[in-house]
View 1: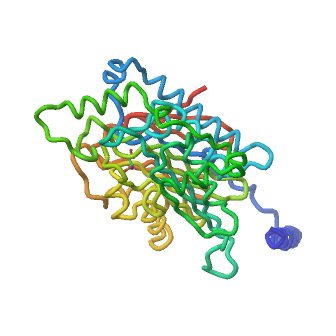
View 2 (view 1 turned 60 degrees about the horizontal axis):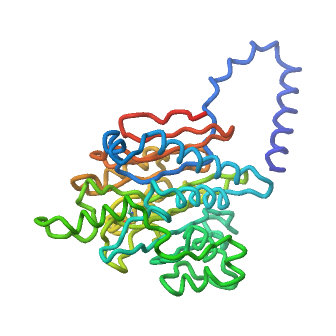
Length: 378
Ligand code: ASP
């Protein structure tokens, strides 16, 4: 900054010197039209959406989804703007709202495993890159994740607690070990982590879904709903950018409906479902986790920006195009770069993705269907 100010002073001194020595110059050219406000927070509530008819049959409306997305954006934005707020707190706050909302497949409202319980995964990553020396990674570049947890109300906070674990380089904790850490006295208090019974995640909609699936007399039960379009996805995620230009990305999920017990998808895998790098962008994915793991999708978006020098929109488009598609679509992602430009990516045969963003003024925009742009919510 001091350097920039120094340059600015020298430049203005030269400009003044020229103004004195040269004949009068024409007036300054008109300023380019004001560019749109910077995005500071992007969220998703899963790719593959219910049609309005399906919503109606389930006693829901699109306004229910829009209101839930707007609530998450406002919570994230508030965390970004409060004193001491930053991108990590914003991601955590937004994702916690989505985890607590039964419309989405994360936390309350999560999908069932094939043996009828809920196993949750989540991850978070910071993109800090103020490295010492050109190209060196910041030693503080941090990530944390939990997988297969059954009693933690907000897995995203447990993931953050792993990321911030003192004296440890651990990134991913699973099952009992993850719960042991998250539910220890000090961690619980610091991150507002609540222990709940697995039943607390069960919703009528998900119970009916798994019962119907198992009751189908003809079709053999398919483990993991990747190719069952009507089951959709539903993972939630967020990416935030703070005033220090630090990015954080986070993802939380119940995983694929009817997944095998112990099956872990992309959501807690750094590089697959979540990635952040302040030199490029932050990414959170939703979809058939196995495909996202095999193609390191979240990191692929960043790699295209870093190595092929693409902008965030082109990188998202190329990354999505490179993923092999499936009937019903493979999924989608959100990305936000360090300059406040965001992009949504969706498999081309998907009907939509629950999504939204907030700009630096705190204005909130949400969208559901692929055919529609995001609209402002007052
Ligand atoms: N990606 C998640 C998983 O494979 C599922 C989803 O996005 O809904 O576990």
